[in-house]
Length: 422
Image 1: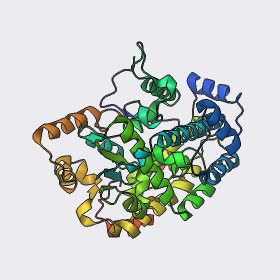
Image 2: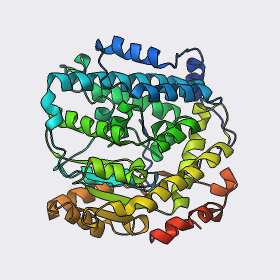
Image 3: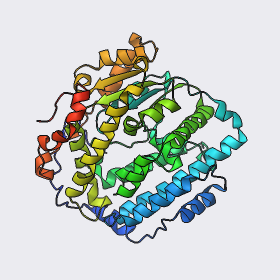
């Protein structure tokens, strides 16, 4: 049984020279014995064999899957554990796409379902978007995407409830979470993936083999450049299709979704969901980047063959510049009566006024009972009290806050973000 860690602050002291525990050594040893064919043919064939289906719908995604596979092979420091995680993930996305296309062929009325006035959260990674999404999801009038459903949105035959297991998809997600937690135990305090954790909608974008998802799992600058230079309308249309399928399967509640990537895709997001309420979070980039760099360096002990702070430093500071500069460029494309900017320094002091503003923008009544339910969620899931990792920017990365902040004056000029990290 896990001990109670509420209120504890953890410092990961071996970031630069990891001391692997038995679970990490076993994971690396086991994965090193595996072989994976990172080719679109092998992945699509595996998905066909898994599902018994063959129609992937529009096949333009194969170009993107090919590039994903090439980038994985080009990543010279991707560890066997990293490869062992990515290959079944690619197969899962392909198999889920087959199931989505099959369901839509059998029920073409799915594509006529309205995704009515969703609430969509975007913002820098590590800026509180996950907690805000979970908080809004505590409102039972809103439909969200728990992790167990995100990774298997269309149930397969083996996912049917049994006398001993009422939700096999949840059970599989729990097994995956326990496996990850055993290998990277500090990750639970940085980004949880338990079955009931509310997921980003990026899992539905990935069915079209796009998004910035694999940037978090491998070093893929060639994919980054391709993604940033290509219109994402088709992928966002597939996101909408995924929501239509889930609505068909489980009911018509109003959706609340989120993905940090939306911050750099505001025009296409608005085009896809023109009646949405858009909630854009903002935080001192140093606070967000410090967290991202630390999470990447911690995970590198099993996902990379080296733990080198220069690698995440060289990638993510510049990547945040692109993300935030596109938000500065495009923020005004969102109608003011449908959008709200949420500032981290205000949110952590008192979320209630901000919640009332969000609900007002969404034209959704916020009564006292609902507010109390949101308060209870906040008490149960507050990152500040459930145990957290203390990051050391200078000790682990040789950086000061100003070394990072100097790159983001354009962002502070546009949004009244408060300096958080000194």
